[in-house]
Image (cartoon, rainbow, N blue to C red; front, side):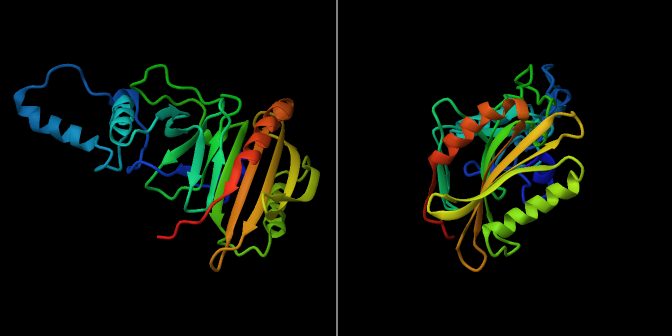
Length: 269
């Protein structure tokens, strides 16, 4: 799934279970002053501290990044980092998603990134080219490349079949039609085949096109499966988007993630 397609279709935020607060941007200019405040401003200071509580405030742009990261570590034992201008949770060892009924064993040297709850959570991504850099100062939330504009990533997602596709074929047809509309002159469908994602029938396809911004040749590959559940079902997508020059290397990570993918019982509230 390309970054444009990811923003246009199902994918809002990549989210994972844990924590209990919405995290948003923090900037260097918003860091609190180290100068002592006069007594008359003490109530304001207490209010500022309260406003930076991740459990009580959903708008934390005026809070220093190291304060937010520290709270997640102390309260929920989460490893949070700032990458691409946003806070992301680091996933290692195993990713578990009970809401959409799957888990993924990650290789020892691979870390996934996702955004903590309480927003709906669907999956995670792997910055295979290490494009997302930490800010120079841990207390600030640096800009840099956004996670939504990665040129190289592996991703895993589960979504309810809200559009009521009859099969994985239908879901892939929609994706290919999207690619054809966005890249009418340079899209190449490299392959499309029937396969399985564990026990479920699946479709695997790979396309190639030219990125309009960078001029680089991009390869996008996805494995899509549909699981029966309630009236809609759940669509699973495991994919890779990368440059043609990186494809051979990054496809190895995709294969590792596919080997680690397992279905589990779906958690019902």
